[in-house]
Image 1 (cartoon, rainbow, N blue to C red):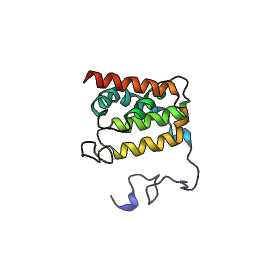
Image 2: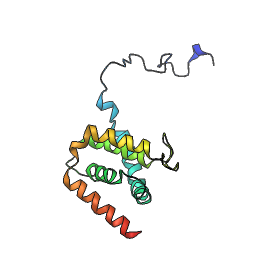
Image 3: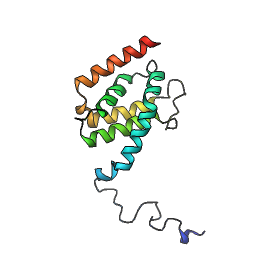
Image 4: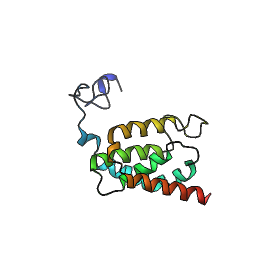
Length: 145
């Protein structure tokens, strides 16, 4: 197939959709599409607790990850914040990411950056009850080991 017979005719030469303006504000309704949020919910439901149990001793941001999980599970959390939290939690759970988690000293740095960015945007949604639940969960996990 030649370049003229582009497999994705709706994309321009840079791989961007027609009418894409990088200076335009991001439309949150597209970033938090219900199908993507549902997929992230499924990934987090399957993988969060096994991953956090393995990583709690090695991850300095474990308390934040757990507080985010409790906040994302809270019915009082706004849906936009919940969607972003689920995206960060799904990134933490996925075995393939920018820096593989098994690399000593570096493996969780990208996950930490994702959580730092997330907390700067939606951190005000984390309530003391979410942080308290996270602390209790860490104690339970450590006691079980």
